Image (cartoon, rainbow, N blue to C red; front, side, top):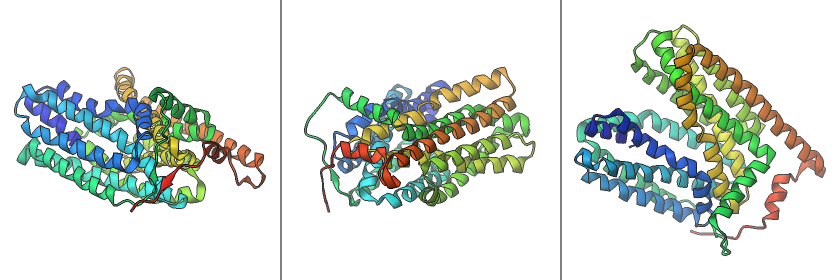
Length: 397
């Protein structure tokens, strides 16, 4: 639906800039991740997930009334609701999963979820564009609404202790700041999240350069970007299946670092004047990028107290994905003023250096915390969790 919304606007208005605004509406709410995360911490998690899906499904059905360019504003409003729902669902799921799963299985399930998402991305845009050509935007909107209703039903089947929001209310701004402060003041958690943010930002910087690789470097049609996109999706699908096991054995910091290194290697390999090599580079990038993101989000889930998890997850999402809005246009400017190869080299070098420095700091912080506590059985993270007190919960059917 995110892709079809832009196609639909283009079809109605014949304006590429207006079509791009549909994608902007989906992305823009990410900026308000900390605030929306604080809202998640004020509400029961599972009902929030259910009702968010149902309300967005209802809003999608409003698009059945769109017939002309005068009604394009309705598409923008619904895509804005879509974007808000992404932030709420990400924060809500991040908060619900630790209550539903053991700590040992959390990383593995996050990896499987990433594989499922990337697998869907290989097919969903193609199916959406094909359906738009056959039945129009209204048909795609109806199908998307049906999928969200199914998702709401599946959330109802999740068994987990229900989180009870605190009765004592403070200003939501204070709650938001508390989540930001927790993430920024925990040196190890901050380092792992910043690795994810670094890799995603660098991915945005290489977006325009990848077009230049296909056009100038390989001398192929821009349509070949579809092949590279599929190769990257296949890499993400495979990488997600391995992430959980690797995190269980080596921890989130190392997986984040490996993700950064693989992303850098794949980015540098795009300099090869050889089509199969460039395709292989996209597979490597596809493995590395999700590793860094899954490591960041799993670290947030494992190291954050339940009563702060929604706002900390929302803040982490903003840190990881927010800079993409700057990275993409900055990357486009860079290839306009310099050779695209320079952009790829700089991105690869900065990613490796930044990833190693940040994960090295995370490792030092972890070692220091384990040395400070006999046996290394209690870390500052767990002590901080205890300081917040036990989370009231009740088992639900």
